Length: 97
Image 1: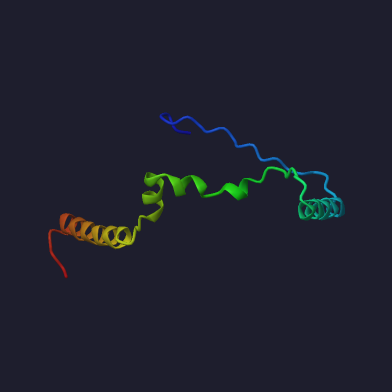
Image 2: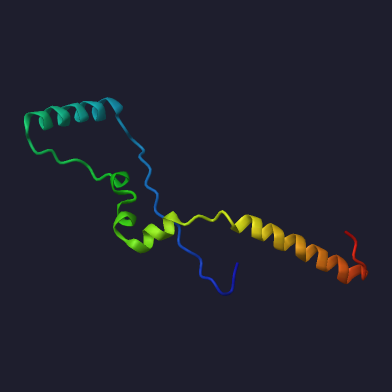
């Protein structure tokens, strides 16, 4: 437990307890037929349909998603190796290559 960070509440994850695949399949078929006939069909809300649309229209989010972090790992590895050499020198007083 941290003193400086408040815990985030658990996210709501609804679980479907009862489902009827035949009924859902029949309803989808009925909606497809109505759509083909030209009727307006109310579809249930689907959050996956809107994923990524916000980042398409904001320049800041586009830059953040397009950033490449290709140099981060090699630079971090190089710094760790240098710090190990410095630590070894401070502990032994000798430079061994």
